[in-house]
Length: 160
Ligand SMILES: Nc1ncnc2c1ncn2[C@@H]1O[C@H](COP(=O)(O)OP(=O)(O)O)[C@@H](O)[C@H]1O
Ligand SMILES: [Mg+2]
Image (cartoon, rainbow, N blue to C red; front, side, top):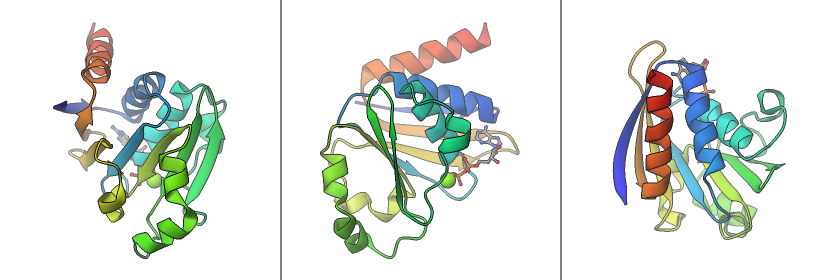
């Protein structure tokens, strides 16, 4: 397991990062996205959805602010949580978050800092920061070496 930092210079680069991630996720993976409003969690999630083969992600993948969770179906199911309006992790237990996390799909959680204590130890954590008007910094913890290699390879291809 390695810690890695990726810099994105635009929404489309963030989306591309998400696509590469989405293509390399497997059933049972949990991604905790931690970062403030506007750091790019939803943009990244749209990319992940696209990488999982979900169609028309621009229109259908939106932050599930009122429902806390949306489900989409691609090569794997995507369970998309947004905990912005959450009042403590007991709400999540009531929602049956365990059924998703230990289910047959990929779980992506925006505002995951609000429930980090109840996530499995092998959860992939991505910390998002605004480092410029169009620049975002992604610090990835606990990704497999294979995923990090794929992300790095993609970044090199973009530079060429
Ligand atoms: N490099 C970048 N990556 C992602 N979003 C960016 C970037 N630069 C600017 N933005 C803008 O920042 C906003 C991110 O929004 P969003 O993904 O909804 O954030 P969050 O879900 O974290 O609140 C969008 O308006 C997007 O166009
Ligand atoms: Mg969002």
